[in-house]
Length: 190
Picture 1 (cartoon, rainbow, N blue to C red):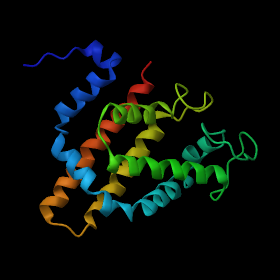
Picture 2: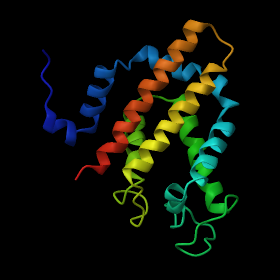
Picture 3: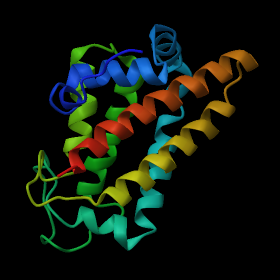
């Protein structure tokens, strides 16, 4: 039986990431599969981003979080607290960020910087990073990740690749999104 220092899991990001990868079984072959899927996903990214924002726009509980000035956004903002239009500049800015996130997932490299980035993605949706006024509730982050996971699965099923390669891609992205979900959830612990 392997010993895991549970207190260290909460303090040492690299240790936590290594544990998650080992336990879930996310390894070099998964990373290779993800990186090799970049050409296949490239054309699907705009559709994935559009689907995410249509979904977010469909619920006041998710859309209201765009009513605050976004971290890194320097453009015009209507009024703090006013829900932005679907086609507003701030939504375009956020869509760009999601596009860059998806591209980064499939272009790697999966090193310490990637681990820091995945962790930052979790923190930026809380007051711990990004805008101090933004605190997206955990339930909203979890439904978003569930939607992204399902959209990614549906997209992978459209790939014109061998069934065993499709299965490898589904498993690799599934593991990666569970790791990302953990690196989101950790920022919601008291």
